[in-house]
Amino acid sequence: MKVGVVIIKVAILSTGEEIIEGDILNTTSREISRELYNMGFEISSHINVGDKRYDIITYLNILSRNNDIIFITGGLGSTRDDLTRESVAEFLKEDLIFDEHLFNKIIYRYKKYGKSSSELLKKQAFVFKDSIILENEIGSAPGIYIIRDMKHYFLLPGPPDEAISIFLKHIKPILSNFDTQKIKVKKIQFYNITESKLMAELNERLSNIKYSTKLELSIGPSIIFKDDFNG
Image (cartoon, rainbow, N blue to C red; front, side):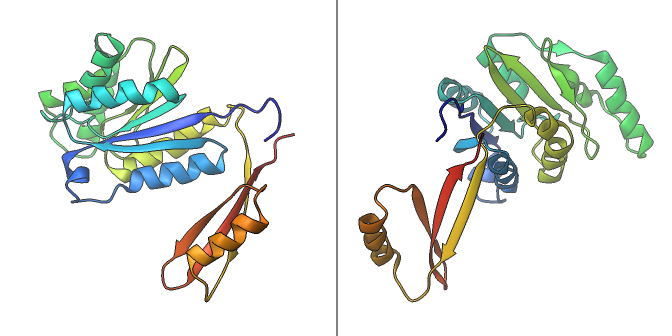
């Protein structure tokens, strides 16, 4: 690692009973992690929790201690079990603020596509002081970007297509300004050898080199070398 390179750590907290009960795959975390890794960020954690305020706040407290950026996905809709805004507000010890302009935009989008609006949509228009609204071009609930105590919080809607769209269009340009540790990766695939035997050989021959192994099902183990190329 080069001297002076700052490692920026990222955690993803995904909410939703449908995730922890195994009804759906958490593809949002996978896709966002892949993008972040290629940008040079270190992904420290993927945490899945249900729609319970206490659990969300508990993990926000844990993740905020050791991470610079935290993504919270899901729970931004209008139903009773959409509790991400309220949970983050309680964690930050702040009050939510109703954004009438945002509410009017949400109503306009509903009417534009021939959908009937509802008072329940008001819930999606509550934001945080000095937060940045991340427009959702696919659904109604926008993303929210908050900076507090030098920590960056990105709130994203649950549907993967909406979350990934917001990430690519709005969040990725923001994060591209961060001074990250760019990583280059070299992968070598092996055949007809077990992972344990390969590890025994590598531990003896490559004791001073950083690497990891991965078992490719029905193929064999692979070895992955990583190094930064800043400067």
